Length: 504
Image 1 (cartoon, helix red, strand yellow):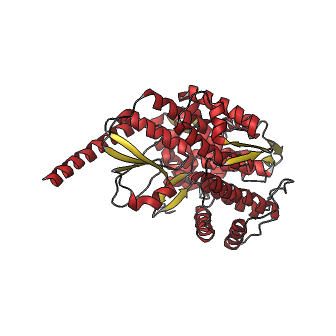
Image 2 (tube, rainbow, N blue to C red):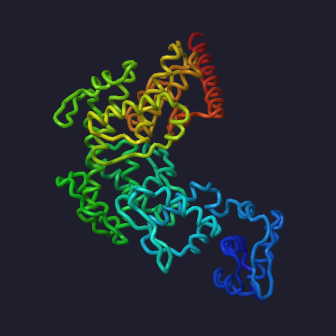
Image 3 (spheres, rainbow, N blue to C red):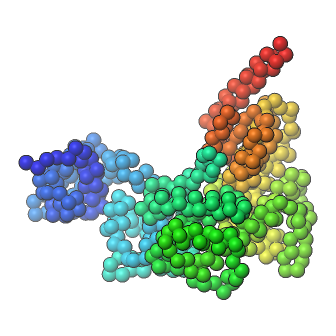
């Protein structure tokens, strides 16, 4: 008698997913797929039938016809549950994963294999492929059908840009032991090795320590994902094409980075790949130079003009804080955009929907910038500008109050998100709190020992021993609002008790 394994749950779930992604199968198909005997397949079918019964789904077994599912198949995901990693994703997220799967593979992929991998039916995959094709229109990338399946053809750099944009939407960032840690969900680990991700972060930290170069949060994440994707592509002998406008002068920091990557991954990085790494390094270096002197004059097409003066001549209503914040933001972003580096704004749709007036103001400013500085702003970039306008508009609506609890805001995705979060907190708890500082993650750890604020509110998870820290989204929810209110009341109560004891 064949011994049953201790835990057959995984094989039962795989059997269900196989039935779901195929119309009708036979015992030899299941035996080959699961690599088990006919007797074991019968046992798994019985177990699967019991699992599916509460969902009104039956496994039909008919001689000379085959084995298939019957019933309300839309409930199949409830039966499989979250034990299969892809099933908790909605349609758009699943399509992102399917697109990423094709972007990272250069050989034709059998569509049945795609169905099995993502636990979807053929009809669902057909709809997903159609939606992906619509998404890729005008991107210089397209599907090509072959006798072995379909493959995604197109410009290698554009492929990597799209792949990086997809992964960036799901990255998970935290701060541990004063170091930035970026992780990716398990859904991506079939194509991007988590160990490689850790290895690249170690290398970037080493480059920063040895060369003193400083990356903003967005620059660090963009470069990290680019390297992780490019090492996979280089190992597969898929290289970027040499660009006519590539920078000939390779920065010392780039040379150091290339040296460490070649040694760590046992690869050769050609000139075209080195040039693109160099663009990231240049963006970081130029951004840091300009960022330290936000009022510095930029020269574009031999027309020198102060960004601050430009803003004052192109914005109808403003205060000095708006001019200051926009000047700092544009000093960094315009240098980055001129080098062809764009960042994904995870809040674009919500910003457009929630703050149409601010987005309109930012859009008009973006057109003026494009006309004068010859730098094009897409929706993601305009949405970041809109946050500054929204913070300004909210400042106009409400007077400042005398406050009691001192708070420092810490940001990772940009000053605009921090300003907006600060404004929301001030508007909601203005009589109880005072925002005394807004810092980036790197600035926080430089000043952490000298901070005298009562509470740290961060847009990224941070652990600081002996300090009160709350993590909040820029658009904080009702639940986060209640959590913050409770924290404020608790800390104010502690302060009052401490003050009373001190007076006694």
